[in-house]
Structures are given as C-alpha cells and as structure tokens.
Amino acid sequence: MNFPATIERFVEFARSTDLDIYNEFALQFELSFYLKKALGKDFKILLERNISYLNLGTDLVKKEIDIIVFRNIASLSDLIVVELKAIIDQKKARPISIFNWTKDIKFLEQLKSSGVGYCYSLFVTDNEKLLSEGTTSNSSTTLRLLPDFRQRKIHGTYSTHATQSKESKTISLGSEYTFKRKNLLMDRDIS
Image 1 (cartoon, rainbow, N blue to C red):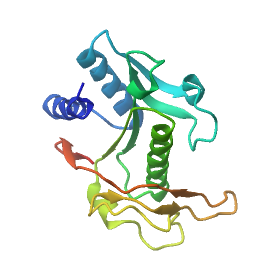
Image 2: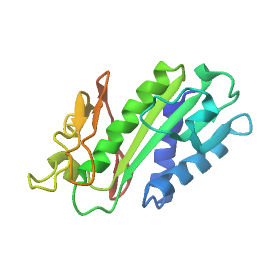
Image 3: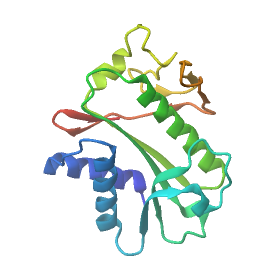
C-alpha cells in the first residue's frame, strides 16, 4: 500500500467536497472515516490509543497515538502511525502549538526507533503566512525558535520559556525533515 498516496487522495477529496475541517478532532475524524472507506475491511483504524497498547515502554514524549492503521497489530513493522496537528482559526501564531508539533515529530522518531514501520505527520493550518512570519517578539512568546515554514524544514532543538506556573520544556529532533504544502481547501493550507 502506498500510504502517502492515500493521504494525497484524502487532500483531493477534502478539496473537491469542501470538507469542513475546523479543528484537530474534525481532521482526525474525517481522515479516519476516509481511511476506513479507502482501505477497506482488511485494515483496522484506531484513534487516540495509549502507547501501552503497543507495549513500547513509557519513555516516550507522548502517551497517545492519534491514528494507528494496521492489518495485524502483532507486526510492528507493518503499523502505520499518523500524528495530527491542526492550527485553524487562530488570530495569532501560537508558539506552543508549534512546539507541540515538534513534540509530535519527536514522538514519531521514538516510535520509528521502537520498530513501528511507518510514521507520518499531517499538519493543517488555514494561515500559513502567519506561521511563516513567526511570532512577534513580545513577552508572551513561548518559543525561542520556530521551525522555518518558509524553507519547509524542521530540525534541531526547540524550547518553551519557563513561566511562573510551568517549567521550560525542550525537544531535540534527531533528523531534519522537509514537508510539503498542499492546498486542502480554498482558504486552508496543508503542509
């Protein structure tokens, strides 16, 4: 199965049917519904499964997987894992949302090194320009560095700033990843 092509077909389906994706849950629901129809009865699709389901240990940066696709759960090397991020209808760039995306990427790296066969990240936004410009340099900025959306790359180390109520968090990615931009809907971008 060519899973990236299936995701591309989902994007085309979303465009052609004017699918209403207004937040991460809507994306998760619509994608899983599409996958169930596209892949048929041979594949099982699970949403928001705890990592304990796969017996991978507890030293992972996240505890739940957004979408798992498989024929046989016993074959880790055949599993498909999809992490989703949907930053939609936001008036300003929210660095913590971008930090959480980098956390998703790190999680996928960890799953891959644990034996999971295929790992994908699907990031949807309706305001790529806002992300490309980054955040304003005021005191509310919570990231020291955003991925370079203009160059379509993510790599390196990202940190949140400590506040009175929260400690600083850091995520270091092991590799560099490039991402593609696809027009999902008339006014929405998928990268």
